Length: 143
Image (cartoon, rainbow, N blue to C red; front, side, top):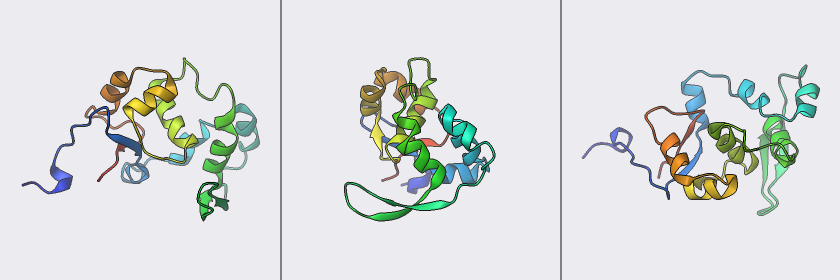
């Protein structure tokens, strides 16, 4: 039997997905530049001169757990993702899925759940995410 990392995963509509931040590191891509592109216009203007936001304490409202979080991701989650035009029918599918994960704190979701949240076909989401190419670190959760 092949080691887990060498086996191919055949995702289904019920496979959980998330943003794999390690993928960004391995690809030597700048996640922060991409995250800034998801800021609302108000925060794009505010943070245009602030490239490095510091980490901050955040209290999980469900568990009460205090965690250190990235200030940029916190802004995306607590303000930008609440704007009416954060995800529209014209938002490209990969960006829309990425924005859902930014808004929910990267809690894993299946293609069915993503389809429900986005009002898009779960089969199309699965087909896009499960190809050979990894888009923006969107990968199945390793069990």
